[in-house]
Length: 84
Image 1 (cartoon, rainbow, N blue to C red):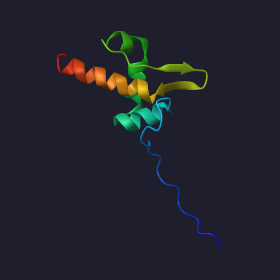
Image 2 (image 1 turned 90 degrees about the vertical axis):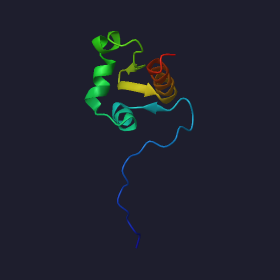
Image 3 (image 1 turned 135 degrees about the vertical axis):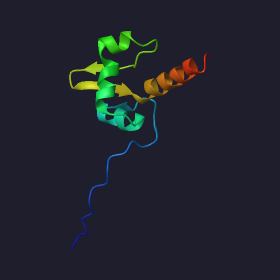
Image 4 (image 1 turned 60 degrees about the vertical axis):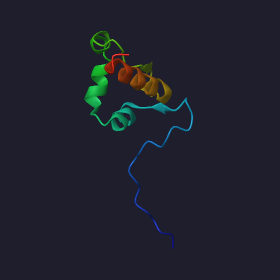
C-alpha cells in the first residue's frame, strides 16, 4: 500500500533560468502583494502613471511575466528609490 502525501503549497523555486515564466498568482506571491496590485500595475493607466512600468507579456492564455524582466524591474525601482 502506498503512502499518499498531501500536496505541498505552491512556492516559486529559485530562478533556474532567465526564461522562467510567472503567472499573476506567482508574481503576487513573489512580490508579497495581492493580485489586484499586479493587475493595477499592468493596466494602461497604471503603466502610464509610473516612470518604470511593470514588464508584462499579454498572451491569449493571460498575462505572464518573465522572471528576469521582473528582477531587472525591481533593480531599476530600487535604484530610482536611491536617487541613482
